[in-house]
Image (tube, rainbow, N blue to C red):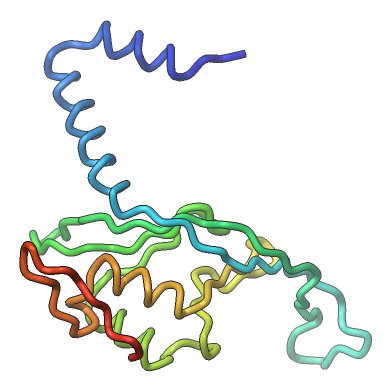
Length: 173
């Protein structure tokens, strides 16, 4: 069996000071991101395809249908990014989704869109809509709103508490 931890330790010991500096910076960045990591319950849907019994002459010859649905936990965390033009921004990344690339820019438009229900299905945030190749993955919108309320309350118009003052979240939105 391969011991990746041991391999990483040996690689670190053999690395140059410059490489160690890069590795340490990466580990510090990941530790910072993991401070915002939370676990949420997601609903996954497996889609399959079947031929239509009476397909139209011009148009689709198959239909997609939901074959299986299950729940599984996914992790969510906030990461910082820098755009090509130098603009700094944050993303909300969903780890453990269907493709592994589910992320959205985290800004007021995203947060307000969640609160106002501007998504395809009410009370549901589809982080991956799904297809025959990829399972669909959705989260309860209220769970994501609560996560944002805990991590970035200013995006929802909530002023963060002053140092030394206890934070009291509003009862309803």
